[in-house]
Image (cartoon, rainbow, N blue to C red; front, side):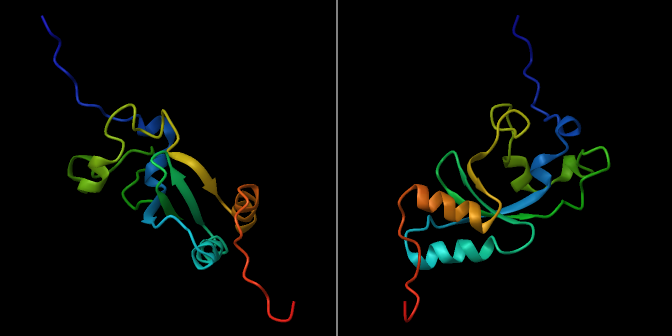
Length: 130
């Protein structure tokens, strides 16, 4: 006899609702000095980060807690949550509690610049008169 398959319900209370602590927007992979400079600018702002996911897609992340996250780190509107939430981490192998979504994570301009230099990327604009 086969056991019925239970739908996956993430352990939000245990992890602190990690995926509900930010909003991330996919951006184009930077390939120009202007694109590198734009990322440097993003990282000059409080609570703004940039990351590369495991599919090598780039994102700008805004640290902003979801207003529906309860004190116990569960979702107050779980059964009526937006479809984007339903699609995010809807299996144990996709949930941030079990694995980080980040391949690379940049919290500061300096971290990003160090990454670029370590990759040998020519990201600096030439300064006039120098």
